[in-house]
Image (tube, rainbow, N blue to C red; front, side, top):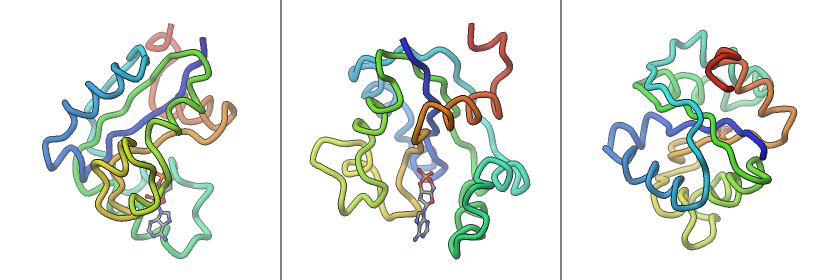
Length: 137
Ligand code: CMP
């Protein structure tokens, strides 16, 4: 079993899609190991997305991610990192495959409904950024 980190982003929570997305997560075979509703501060969002700080969209991204509450999740499944990325689909909802979460619920590349760790090493950092070790047992 492997763990990955996921976010149901503020655009999806605002549109009351969190329940539908959680149902899809469970249907895709994940166990929800930890979960929290949290309205990130701008500083918390900047720390989380620090690898993107040189990108032109960094300000827009962190303003959006701190614009309302999101759902933070630790998901467990065999090959969870890849499985979750496949479940979400491509970053840009317009390019995401049919049946993926971003295709079904994303509005734009920024307001794309969900986030997921892109590699096991990233998952370890992202899980540790938001959850205490005890919450992930
Ligand atoms: P996420 O998986 O959360 O990781 C980084 C995020 O940056 C990504 O999803 C997108 O929502 C966002 N992003 C990537 N490219 C752009 C862009 N060109 N403009 C705005 N946001 C972007």
